[in-house]
Length: 577
Image (cartoon, rainbow, N blue to C red; front, top):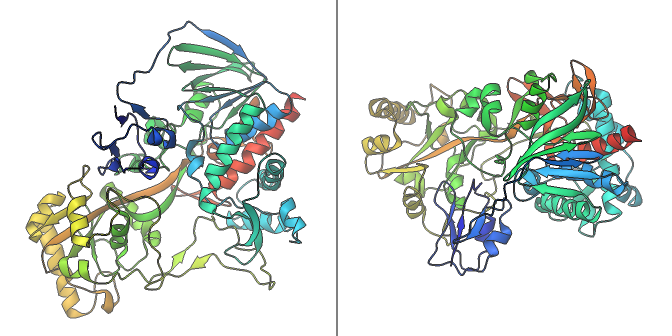
């Protein structure tokens, strides 16, 4: 009996990492389990954070039921970090709390979050670190050009260390310490920061259970029940039927908008672009907070809906080491029309806006055999922090000077990619790896013995592509890039077969916003608080600036979930008395 994957795999690779024999492997679209190799040990199922791996022959038991009536003090919709923090905090205070989660497991996208940004915690004070809370608030407001509500930002930033100190009172925080952050200041960090999201969500889930939170998984909220402008309940559904849950206060913590009709309406260009399932595109994130608010007559701030772009050129279905090829500054890049569109030595983080304008937001990195075998030439162009994620900008360092959130990427300055690669992690030569990747589903890597064959395999117009390559090669021979001004030492012709193309796409941390909140995390409708309704995490759109579809934020999303979940929990307790 082997195990199999049934559901929207997000290619996180945890199943492959847990399997003692390497039975799970990516086919370019998602992980599949080799049934002949499977030991039926169940390690993959335990490791799957979506709960979608089952033993062969498994049939989910469905028990149909009529409408089920439940009641509680506080109803939390969404089992990510923000929702669980609010649920645990309020249940700990003696309130009856019900938590709804659409997926089989709690944690949401927060499980994969990294870099919990902390300041002004008791741990830092004990280590003699000066309290710079006001500096951080000023920096946040400056980053967002003072266009966000200073009271909301201030309350959330004060909630951030309060939440951390609260967690220190009941969780084992021995793996956290005061360290020097990238801006030279001392702050609290997890010793392995990449595990911060997993640490928080696992501990919060356990604390929810310890404090008596009633957790209903695979149960989706469908409708807010309103009476005289006040939220008094929610209609939800599980596999068996309908639930009617009455409550005195309700929290919307449904995460960002990665899928569904809301994304189609708000950012249609990205909705129809090439997309890839990964931990930043959590399958439960369908904008439920927006659809429920809209149906209840609560105003939705569509102008706030924006994406957080991770980088302009992210390869998919390619083994980890091969992803470095996408960033080769001496390669050629073309779009779906077969036309060159960028100076390839520009760092992909800085090429975001140019790639958004390409058909399908997609790009192809073109390499010939000579380029493939040559040393990597990373981009040299500077990466400018536009997102505001590095809140250290504007914070005085130990020397009293202010740091700048600008980094430069000279050749050789880029590390290798992190995270699991595709099937077969044993070192192989680049050509073998690309030819193998070309056999995966999804069409992520293409090989051609001639340029004509490569164009046909890519699906781009052959004549246009050949003309593009001829033009590029002529510029290489000339030693001057008349079209995009690439430095001469990066101009390498595409002429020695076989030829390779790696398709890349836009990647995001998600699409955010839709609801406005006041300084208490109370949902606003037409500028007025909706009694009994709160929001937290990615649902709040007035905590950042929408820059033409991309959000300029004052702190990273995981820290915001941490802070706003605690703020919402505290506010609901004050509201209920």
